Length: 216
Image (cartoon, rainbow, N blue to C red; front, side):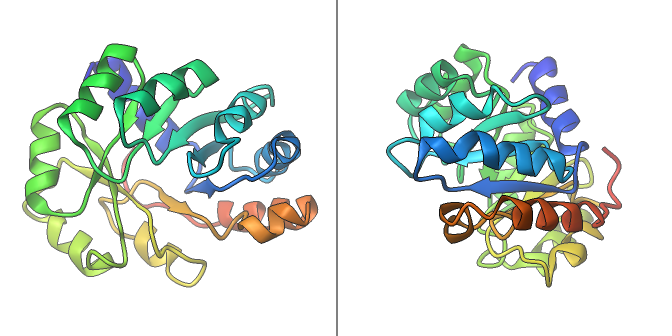
């Protein structure tokens, strides 16, 4: 991974304490959802490729001023190509197979790869990744595991995702090796389907009050 790509991911990680993880089923919801999140202070948006219209959603959200839109759940090189074509400015994956890393590098797509073990984290750090998605956060040991990583792996920062909630988000963000966290509670699918944009914006504003103690 290039230094520029790594720096971009670090820049994004410092914009807000929470990156909303979004599942959007209807393209017409994309722009109002993005506007609500940006207005609430969360400009970095991860659109998961879990719905048929996800790529169109990315394209639509990219039209919203102030939004930094990435594609989540990248699994294959084809996902990378499609995400770039849709306008995604970064990519996120639950893991980090070599083919996916290579595809992101070839496409010039800044990448946040997933890791759940010390070995995975060390391998990715050796490849130039200094910020990793810790996934599934709660399933992989949560705060206890990340505390354990802190001593032997001081140069690696994490964005925990998977089980992060309003109840435990600040505990994660209080760790010195956590720069931000991914959360689906900001804009859950049912709230998006009901078009509760004001409530989503309020949740975003509440999330901005969380603070990371890591150096970004």
